[in-house]
Image (tube, rainbow, N blue to C red; front, top):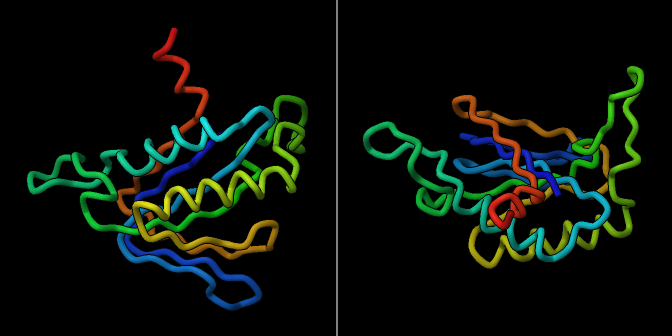
Amino acid sequence: MRVLVQRSKKSSVSVDDKVIGSIDSGLVILVGFTYGDTELDIDYMVKKVLNLRIFDDDNGVMNKSVLDIGGSILSISQFTLYADTKNGNRPSYIKSLKAEEATKLYDLFNQKLKEYIRVETGKFQADMLVKIENDGPVTILLESDDKYVKER
């Protein structure tokens, strides 16, 4: 599981020229799944996203989480996070989880986030227009495989 996190001042997602989700201060997260991802990966990423300290404290140091600032999350499904460009110039998406399975994991991920914070979402498999006002800019890639690094 991969989550690309962007600190945002204001962002929205539209489908067919209609805004279906928007946030003010918070995080825009682009979420992708691969084969072998499980609920354990989701639990790890929920905790990581919610507690990632990338918002400034009173001293201008990135020391606060989205929970600390009372922010929101705009969650967008993004199968292209698993693009493989090793061979040639046309990306392969063979590592991206098939839509039926990915939809279930994406919904579960958002449901678990919503237990702690306001979450707006895009529409799975739709052609979306995502407007992101990236604050900083701050962009961080999280991978659920990282949860195994500490265990070794």
